[in-house]
Length: 254
Image 1 (cartoon, rainbow, N blue to C red):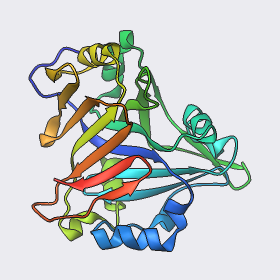
Image 2 (image 1 turned 120 degrees about the vertical axis):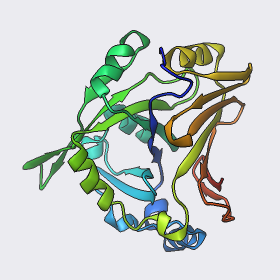
Image 3 (image 1 turned 30 degrees about the horizontal axis):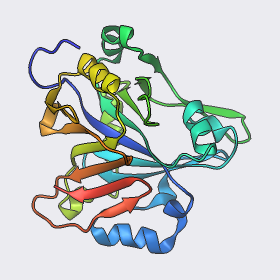
Image 4 (image 1 turned 30 degrees about the vertical axis):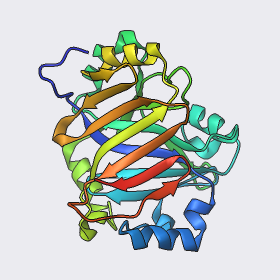
């Protein structure tokens, strides 16, 4: 993707994590998250008979924990539902915020992106369908890592402002102001890295590491590793946080 500068024109929006039910209902785990300084009230998340989403708000960014409760997933992203029901747990997607999703998909059309599309959820015994007030576009999966990058754009700035006000309780009240960096570890192939260089402006330090600088001082990093893991570094302004492990996600302080 051709860039006007050495910073990609995107910022981190949210990270989607497939989780077992215990991460949304276990009182001890919920208390552990809150004690770390990350206010977590999973009872407030959206959902229906097919899925349950719970959010962990980190400044302007967030984690979205997904528990699938039925075979069809209640309208959740079908491919992700199928992977969940086949046993996948851990980070399944990272969404980057774009200011023009149509332009983004046009520019990346030759690199396998699909969308934009809007998710719809059935409620009240399928009598009502609620459509999301944003659109998503998805890049292909990596060769050997069950994970996708995607892009998201909220319909209007006014809707985005209203959504931001609902991102509570928020860790910024505890001095943790956002996500600064996301590190992906896994058996990424040479083809994965070459493809990423076509999608983004990248900095290649060696054959086993690829760095992608984003707006707002954020970044994402890919490391070749035998083990699949995602590490998210938070902007905690020097506040020391104990690591928090959720499936293959490790949340650390920056």
